Image (cartoon, rainbow, N blue to C red):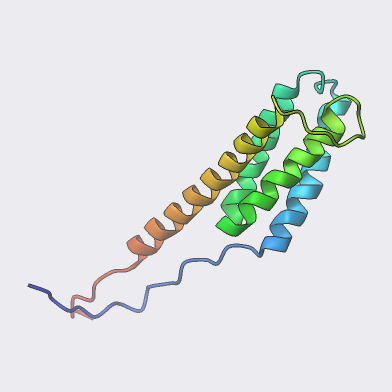
Length: 136
């Protein structure tokens, strides 16, 4: 049996994700700052560390944006990793044995971050909805 209930006034909408261009701008500048910081610390000789740090950045940016922003976020992070963290520095290249895995890792991080944010928002919205019991 279906029982209709009045929803109390306390229900709020799920927050909107940030606009895709803003997320991409943050990905570009954030990647540049992160790779620059790793270079100053002398940690760019191990590209695995740079990939892990950029994956965390992609996941955090994924939590702010829409699913549509994930591929661009991953490509921007990969491009800055490829240009500044891989020798020869300043040259964009494609290594068939390495770069597809890097792009897939960054894309997975961005998509996982977005999925986690959407699930958290949906759960929070569900918890905010309280049935009206008629006592007020």
